[in-house]
Amino acid sequence: MPGGLWADLADLVLPVECAGCRARRTPLRHGVCAGCVATLGALRPTPVRPDPAPAGLPPCVALGAYDGVLREALLAYKERGRHGLARPLGGLLAEVVAAAVGEVRPVLLVPVPDTAAAARARYGDHLGRLARHAATRLRAAGWPVRVRRPVRALPRPDSVGLDSAGRAAAAASAFRLRAWPPVGPVDAAGAVVVLDDILTTGATLAAVGRVLGAAGLSPTVAAVLGATRKRQSR
Image (cartoon, rainbow, N blue to C red; front, side, top):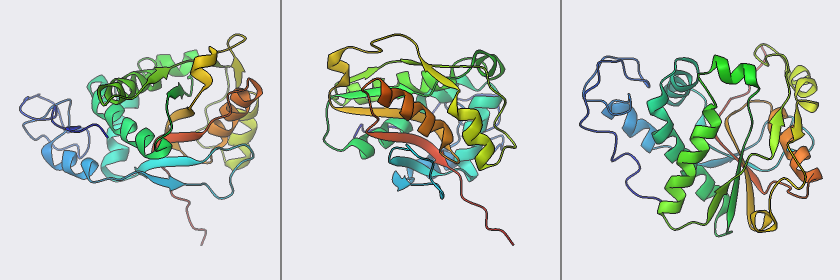
């Protein structure tokens, strides 16, 4: 897969804290220090599955657990407006896609859509940016890749604080096709990969997968950056 993923993360001094460890270190590039670059670069995509998994959830592959440096970098990108992280995080997402689809070509990337309210709160379409950078990285390695947005998000309550049942209920009616047919026949060939940043209960990915499946675009796999770990009850 694409080499030199973190080559663009050196030699630029920025007067901000590191997005990964929150220490004020230099040099930084796109807001990440050398130590956090090494930590993120050591992560390897692996299959993940929430337990219980919702009906319709496609196979999922994650870069790593949603904790530590990866969690901090994602929060900085999504919640604190650190848009410079889109390029390296998108490159990491490309690594996940590559591991998830293997030799299957071409690849259609479908990022999970945000509601308009969420996009405003998160400084824009954060997954759309990640998808574009992931596609750029994959194309540079010779992959035939397209990004399409056939699904739109309807207004829904914030999933933060909801349990598994609440997330499933909120996600079940949260997505619709934008148009029919959503993509051309060439796009439908090969692997259909749904992209998200974090896998928690899988309700959102399952809901998007059902909408795509009804349009004849059943997802091959879902690629995410972080996967939460189930807390053990005491």
